[in-house]
Length: 212
Image (cartoon, rainbow, N blue to C red):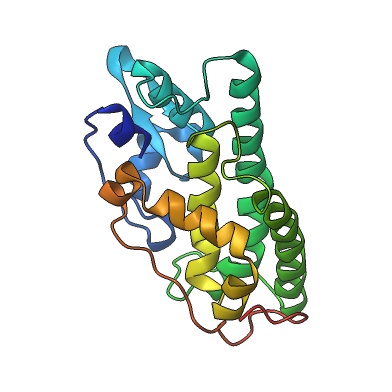
């Protein structure tokens, strides 16, 4: 998405670790990744792993879309703060809830009903704080879309695909307004033309407040 926004052409290789597709080849090129995606091969032997490093690198090549903010150190730091929160807090917490519910994984996630319920409660707590923020702000940082908005929305999409059902969406209008704004952005539509949303939470999706 960052590449699309900046007009950078990338050659893509399909790697789906949970299904074992391309995992061995990916590991051979990016041994520090432990098989996780993404990975980026750049000029002069550059090889990057980790989402924050790759997205920041791509955003800075031309900086046409100002994805790191308005050019000030303060906004760049705010964007990085939200990206780090999304990557280190939001996605791992959501994953505790939705990963055990994904069928046909080559490496099944060890989970119990109690651990899924814990992931659900922790996820809803984080999302509640995000909802409060987005009811008062159009963008996460500044006055235009940045990497902060894109990364948060992309990770929210994982929850929407697997566990955040219709009732939750109806009750969290701030997050959904923000998500739909990012999803309608040209570079996002170019990469992900359609996004799946679950209607009803799968069986075993955790105890407690039902968000569907």
